[in-house]
Length: 209
Image 1 (cartoon, rainbow, N blue to C red):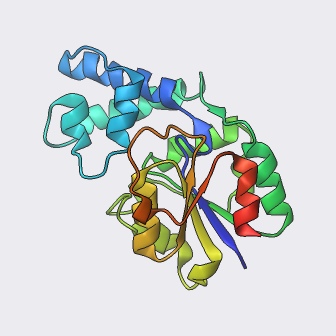
Image 2 (cartoon, one colour):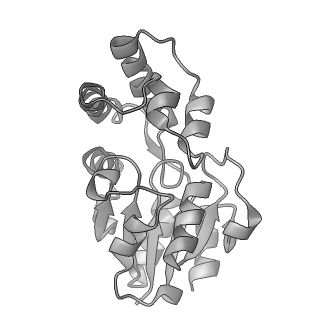
């Protein structure tokens, strides 16, 4: 049984406008901070080793009231602009027709991730969605991937993502990493972390088949 694990933001769905809107909402409402540009937000999100609470809000710890406000705001905001990247629907249909197991591993909350997948009519393709709230350590730690892979054969498992966090998580979990060149693709990804690189979704078939 072959298994493909997808990142969500910047891989399956272009969510940068909605993420930007919700982060800037929290910056204004909770911390009286000016807005950040979407490019900067995506760059920070995809860079390993950063304290995002500090980068986004100037605090050392992501405070519960800010977290709750973000999730409430984003649950509505993510319905506004988040759209599938071109070719995603087609490649998911092809993979599913070949009886390949599909999963999502995302550093976003599971609840809002499912809302986005459902709103774009692709939730039904996936066996499970593992968000950051379901693990102790989000990507680039391999915990999410290890949870999904379990006893499956690692040489028949692939992680598809657009960032260095995804590729590091794949390598640490012992699965094959595929860099999605159509995504946000802002952060530098070290070549040694990449097993495969594809330019558009349908090219995944050349790697997985």
